[in-house]
Structures are given as C-alpha cells and as structure tokens.
Amino acid sequence: MKIGARTIKTGIAVTISMFICALFDIDSVIFAGAATVLNLQPSVGLSLHNAREQLSVHFTSIGLAVILGYTVGSNPLIMGLVTVLIILIGNRMRWKAGSVGGVMAAIFILSSPGSEFLQHALTRSIAIFIGVAVALLVNLTIVRPNYREPLLTKLTELNNLIAAYFALGVRSYLHLPAVEPETGDKKVKEIERLFRESQKIYELYLLDLGPLPDEGEPAEKEQTESALFTAYLAFNKGLWQATRDVLFLAEQRRERRLIRGDMPISPEFQEILELLENAMQLFIRCNDELTERLRGKRDLAPVGELRIWRKLDDIINRWHDRFPSGSYYIHALVEVSILTDKIRWAAKESSRLSRL
Image (cartoon, rainbow, N blue to C red; front, top):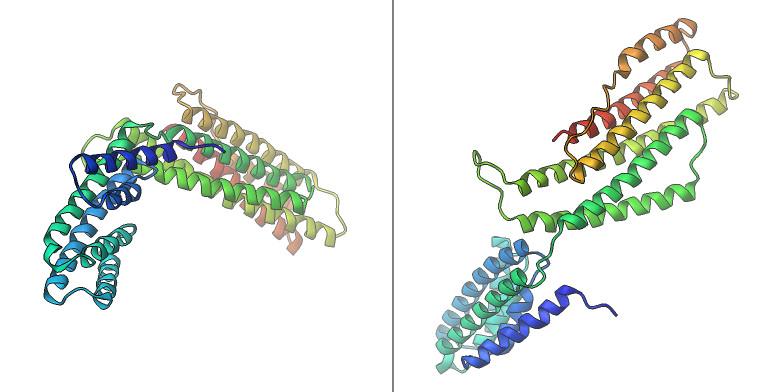
C-alpha cells in the first residue's frame, strides 16, 4: 500500500494543530484537528479559498449559536433549527465546503452549559484559527504540489491519442477501411478518461496560480503559460469533435459506395483524395510542432502554409465537368468539403497555438 504526500501532510498537520492546542491549554483539540483536515486541500489555491470560506462559516455559525443559545436556550430543536439556518445561509452565499464545519461549531457551542457559552465560543474560534493556519502552513511548506508537469504530460498524452484517432478517421475515409467497433469503443473510453483526468489536474493547476492579474497589468510567465494550456485543452476538445465527424463521414461514404456497387474511383476524385492525404501530413507536422512548443522549444521552423482550397477548386471544377449531376456526386462533394474544412482547421489551429 502506497502512502501519498497528502496523506502524510494531513497526519502532520493534525498532529501540529493538536499539539499547539495542548501547549496553550486550549480545549476542543478535536475541533482544531477537524478544521485542519477540512482546509488541507490538494492545491494551495484551493486551500486558501476554503480557508476564507471556513472562516466566514465559523463566524456565522458561532453568532447564530450564541444568540439563540442565550435568548431561546439549548435543546435538540434549537440545534436542528441552527443546522437548517446554516445550510440555507451556506446555499445563499454559495459556500461549497464549509457548511459541515459550521454545523459542527454550532452544535459544539449549543451543547455547552448556559454559563459557559462565551468561553466555549472563544475556545472554538481559537481552535478553528489554529487548524486553518496549520493547514495552510503545512500545505505551503511540505511537498508543495507542482501540477504543471503532470498537466503537460496528461494533455500531450490526450493530444497524441486524439490526433492518432483523427488520422485513423481520415484514412478510413480516404482508403475505406472500416474501424473495428471494439477498437473504436476502446479509444473512446480512453480519450474520455484522459479528458476527465486532464480537466481535474487543469483546475488544480489554475487554483495553484492564484488570482489572475488585473486588466492592464503585465501577465507573469505562469499566467501566459496557463493561457496556452487553456487554449490547448480547447483545441483538443475541438479536435475530438472533428474526429467523430470524420468517422461519421467515412461510414457514410462506405455505405454510399456499397449501394452504388462499389464503383471505380475517377482520376479526378483520386486526385482530391491525394490532396487530402498531403493536407493530413501537414496537420501531423503542425501538431508535432505544437507539442514541441509546449515542451519549451521556442525557435520553431515554419511548417508551411495550408493552401488547400485553391488547389481543391481546380480539381473539383474538372471533376464536376465530368459528373455534372446526381445525388451520388453531390454527397461526395459535400463530404469532401467538410473533411477539407476539418483538416484545414486542425492544421491552422495547431500552427497558431505553436506561435503563442
């Protein structure tokens, strides 16, 4: 069984918070430990966010408990009422993680003897502050997580898989081999898993960067890099949608040709397919260049301009002169147009991102 850094940090933080409470003779060390666990998060940014939230919940809960405890008294009905009020206020204020700690604080205070309400409120407050402070200190000093490299690794792994599947889909259209359903299902599940993992690490990475700079202020290197990661994740989502569209077009072309008896491919259409094959090679080079850019390479040689529409225009005109009408050829023209646009977008977008 492996013990992760966060598990060790949690144990250390709880030990420190309880030791501080014992050193200064502060009661309710359990509450300090609970506050520590609630605020020890996977990232520094998330820990800071939850600390602010926890403090707000704490002050609100203590205030409600003291007011109701002194004016109405303490009994199970009052405890239930305070619980409802804290949850309602938490929903109103959009507190995502602090309501449980607030309810705990209120119940601790309301369960105290009437003559000791203020004393218990003070000790619980001190315990909360100790727990939050220790959690932040431990998270900042002990094995501070670095999400940049895991994020870069996960995003490039995701891109490599999608780009390969995109190329497979284009080849399936150009050369008509069908993608086996089992192979397709396996790739879809793997890509969706990588998307979930990448999104999770990406969110932790952004939280660790802290707040974005104000408008007009120069962005730091990390903020500029985060913009590239954001655009790269969006590019992969677009490429994944394009891949599914291309696979659909390939299946439609196979069915259309089967219905027409698998007619021979005309020289003009074969020229179109070869042009698209060359365009795919350019996309692969642009995508590889983008990967190099993400890994820190700056002086990248230009890949070349994708002027596919101009070349395609002449070929289609010659093709249309031979086959001026018929739904079979119109379908082929529409498919080629869509496929050309998908490849062109993928190549130009990957080339643009490599220049950021």
